[in-house]
Image (cartoon, rainbow, N blue to C red):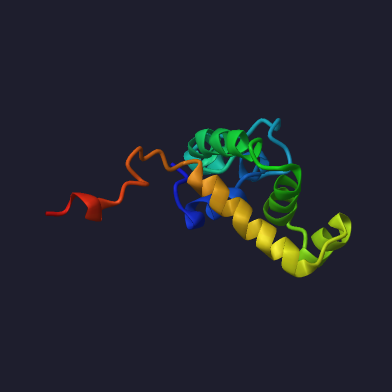
Length: 124
């Protein structure tokens, strides 16, 4: 789960989806039969909860600047210029921090104990 840059980026874009009900009120009582399409939360609500929890744990391992850039970029939807201004950094720096942070989040999901082994060493 969450082992590549594109997968992590997708999870970040959908991080807040679990809290976005389809209707303006999840407390209203529907009239008639309830079908899957009429439930207040999106279909992927339960599927995304585990992914979101894992992402939250990994975000806690980033340094504060990386976490700020990632959350403002993906969750808040802030433009890079606004993030840079808020941090007192250049826009180029914000792009580099975002890229590095997303790659770190993906690296945290790769649990291959042999990932750093040089296979050429074992070739005969």
